[in-house]
Image (cartoon, rainbow, N blue to C red; front, side, top):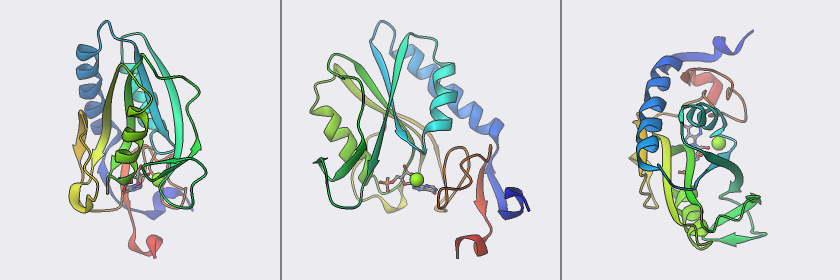
Length: 180
Ligand code: IMP
Ligand code: MG
């Protein structure tokens, strides 16, 4: 019994994703020359994307991570996200680029972008690998956008179903019986 037994189909291969990530990195390399770039990854989904993207960025940069949850009662809240793990870097003066796996409802990212904007970064932009625009409730403006996905739940390349399948190299759709 392997993870592969649970896959219905591969939506995007590792190689195809690599091409998308290369294009995003090329645009970032062009735009951030001479800037003080800080990549902010949202855990856990962005981990694979972040690690591939940062190695294609040829400019000096720093990285940091945040864990946020859109649900539940707040410990610290701004907008409507709960910060589970905050940044370790003071982002004032940094050209912050938020790195996210997928924009779906937009709820998480619109809150995170608002929250970070209030911390006086020199600039604040968003790089999202995948876009699922079908159920958007909060407007999100992705400055760098990789690929639009069909209206399906996907796993792999960092994305999970019930915390599993993040380690699949390809972006996949699982067999329906797995989701039920
Ligand atoms: P949003 O606040 O609805 O935009 O939520 C985005 C988050 O939901 C992403 O960071 C993912 O963690 C998760 N998500 C959305 N769509 C998928 C999917 O198809 N597969 C796995 N996770 C997803
Ligand atoms: Mg998730």
